[in-house]
Length: 199
Image 1 (cartoon, rainbow, N blue to C red):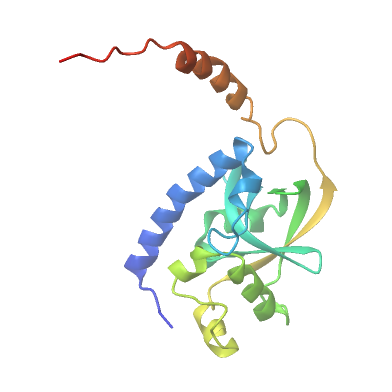
Image 2: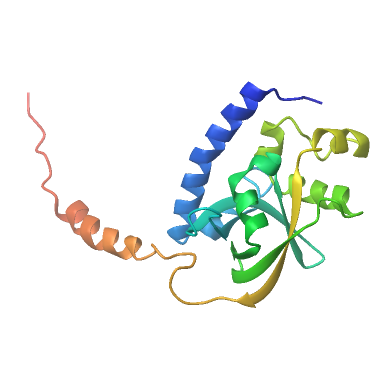
């Protein structure tokens, strides 16, 4: 088992910030299903919309998730210090973008539940590379080793309450694709060809 130090954790946080921006953009472009096409590698990724505890503004964070017996679970791998986790503690009403739809829901703390460890293991398995980047192999670690390595992790159960539709959801930037095609395709088809020089 690899225990990451504080400096490594900060580097992981910074790396995940960049990855999260890319993932959110892909979801907004309507590519959420493609992101989730290889769960063993890139993991299962949803977008969690929550309310800033200080700003009151809507925030969006891509997170790994697992569905167990029809119920949705995710984890805050950086523990209580994760901004999105602290926002949800302050206001548990959330929205989730999943490959199969967009939902309103309510987040419930499941960290102290008796089923925490098997549920957390499922989320970590579904996280693909993310768990391994943190030095955790959920497929190989014993219950004792996994429990020790994830002491700070917070487990959340997202209870879906209503299906959402309309503007502001996943694919809100999907209009970019036809516009880009409309502009770039004629340029590609009708660009002047260079004449080959004869020597």
